[in-house]
Length: 331
Image 1 (cartoon, one colour):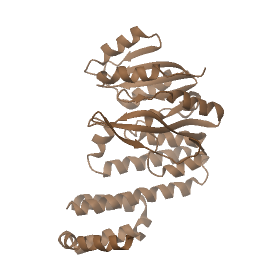
Image 2: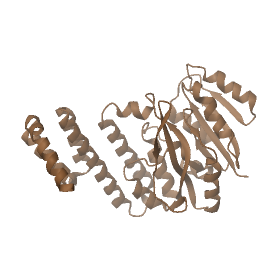
Image 3: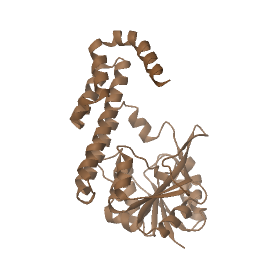
Image 4: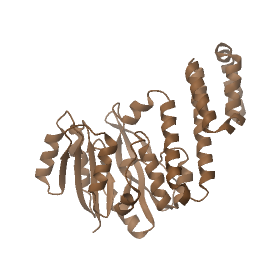
């Protein structure tokens, strides 16, 4: 039976920790260990974790005396892992039945696959509100060559972290998460792993991801769009600086991804213009051109330039007509 080490970083999620850990311990078909790492939570995380340790010898617990942050916590767990496979599972998420066995079975059949990921349910306000369906595949699974995965990712993170099961030897070979990427470290990690191995995708529902106000990603992007774009760009630059020499056509892939990032920035700039935020428009436009100068030859840039030329008041007067013309063109 293949072994899986499940690393559970926890900060202020003591009330969700038991469900998370039990979802890993109850996985059939794999030999599971769980390490809970409490990053100095001010809630009852330590009490809950100690109870879980008392009730099951497969559970270990480490508590930080001071908050080290999620990147250091992830890397501590990676260094601890010694099983065939590992999974980083945030304490506010949980696995669905059979998830680990499905992932391990795929990788046992395909030794070139370095990690697998799958679909997930998104839980919001105690209700399952959305199902992520990342990739189209036949027979319930798909094997992607590394460059194919990198190209498909574009400038997005297409992997839902609680579904990502990684070969431990590969993870420890490529190293841990980068401290320079506190908000896009996972995006860079999947690209880095894909540079060294194939990627497996499972169409099955593998985990439940909780979306709530305290999610770091949500609180971060709420600061507007520019910080998110800057972190995505940094993730791409770190990845290609470290792995570009082993990725076929890396220069072309990077150019394509930076163009997509630049186009996203122009889209946000256009929305900021509509909101009457000229400073955001200027910042986002500058970022777009610095990221990929050829964006200035795109239709989206021409549209934004025209809007800025006519001014906000005129644009708001013309917008209903423009929307009507666009609807007519698509009918």
